[in-house]
Length: 279
Image 1 (spheres, rainbow, N blue to C red):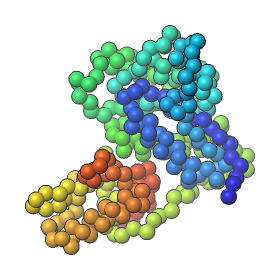
Image 2 (image 1 turned 90 degrees about the vertical axis):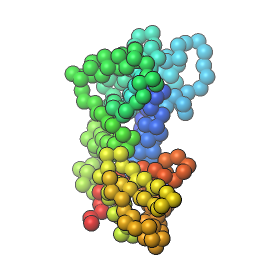
Image 3 (image 1 turned 45 degrees about the vertical axis):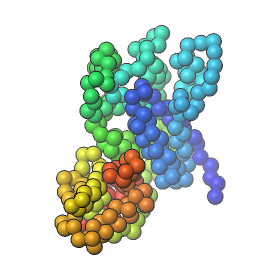
Image 4 (image 1 turned 60 degrees about the vertical axis):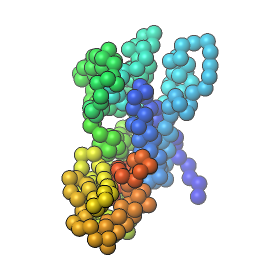
């Protein structure tokens, strides 16, 4: 059934070393739409150069990006890790220019810096140095957030996005009781087995939000938050916990990383459900 809603363009800004974070931002925006859009009469549209730019000549690449879609955005989400990006005619990089333009015209800007480990032979020290200089320049101009894992970034961005949409005047809608939405959740508790609840709850306590499933000649392990849930190698017990793992994946509470079925990360929906579980 159709409904009227106001569309807000969410600009995703970053250098090329945080592709996973760009995907996470889109995932969180789509999930917010699925849960809150009809109640709030708001749609969040993720916007980025890879989906909203088209070939054009006659100007610098950054100016073309600015004219094609950046200046039409409402909220900017920027992420950095090891690179600051390619310099423009005015700023240290295109991403920095996008951030500064939003700040200058007083549009909401959410800024994140990753502290995830990285191999030294994969980074350019000049990029690291410029990024550090830019980060230092931001310290006295507002608030930014750090994170040390993709799971941590998912959780932080989802929570921060809800706060921004509830508090910022840009997203206030007439006839909507925004204060009520802070305490009410539209996320329903799915029907889960006790084993699935235990796995999800433990994984949500892990800093990386992961579950590891390993098979050896001598047996099978399913681990989360430093705990192994299979006490013996009896097939009945192994099947019980493997079934719980499959259950969490099928209900979109976990996301398989890679194609070997060994590592799983909690989705944003999974973190919400884990918060509701009482054991």
